[in-house]
Image (cartoon, rainbow, N blue to C red):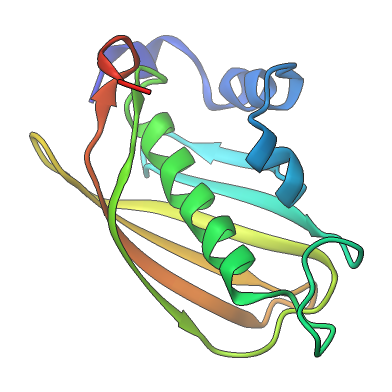
Length: 152
């Protein structure tokens, strides 16, 4: 992990996310908003707005692929934070378990870097409904790479 993380407080980093004008289109589609950052614990807490006009399946529940995207976002952002804002974290593999239906509205996500290795990081993510019930969880394997080396 980069020493750059120590140069910015958690509060300053959270403000950087919240004030960003360059949010990726996928994040905007999911209604992503950063709630908290803990660099020492390598965790983030985020919020998603599951829009009824965009993300629902025929049962009026949030489609599972969108839940996977939300979990991937939680885990990837946790890696970006853990890197001191120096690396992207492309997902190599992800396993998702769906525990209960997600309904339209606000969902809370938690992303954790469980282990940061030399070339690979292991991540965990969870999504909760407004009542705090666990909706889905995931584990992932990512390959952090410095933004300057990231090939699009």
